[in-house]
Image (cartoon, rainbow, N blue to C red; front, side, top):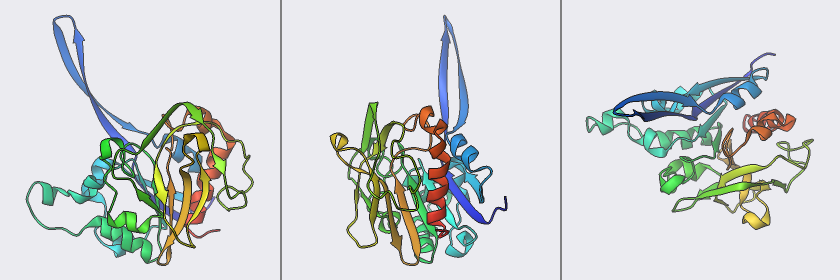
Length: 258
């Protein structure tokens, strides 16, 4: 299939350090992880040419200008905190000024780009509020507002999605019964004629938004408040035939293909 839509996935990676104790002795190890495998596999034979920029590379690698981002149709921010893009090494280590890339992303969307935020421990407001996307230029572009505190909804018992707009291009044709999700970020949908809550959590989990769409200037914006894979989005959801359909539909909507 011809790849005619370019997508930049920013984040969805992390590093872990462990100390191992074996009696008197101990040693340490460091490992690198990516949670994007299920999503990348689901898009492998689609029309989307996806580039993943790991979180540690985004600190320096995400471009500073709208022009430099103009080659992408869609940018997804996934489980990466605002600090990573605010504290470029020139700022953090050398006290120099650089352009604010949160403003760049907002302005790129306003100029026609498709900007999406995916839930996780470091998106929206995240664990202990460390995602820090509230009151940022990126939040200005999104169709939701972040809370001022830890916004995680942990649901080890699982919850099903409630589809409110079954004819929306993102969910049209999908089975109304989705596999269970294990968590999400709590957000508040903005007021506006362009903002649509496509799906939400059930009432006994607060009825909070799960998929919200909107516009910013000439661009489209989207919030998916759960994850792309385990743990919030368990393997049963990844294995569901609707998983690939759902993500392709979200990207087509953001890219103005539907």
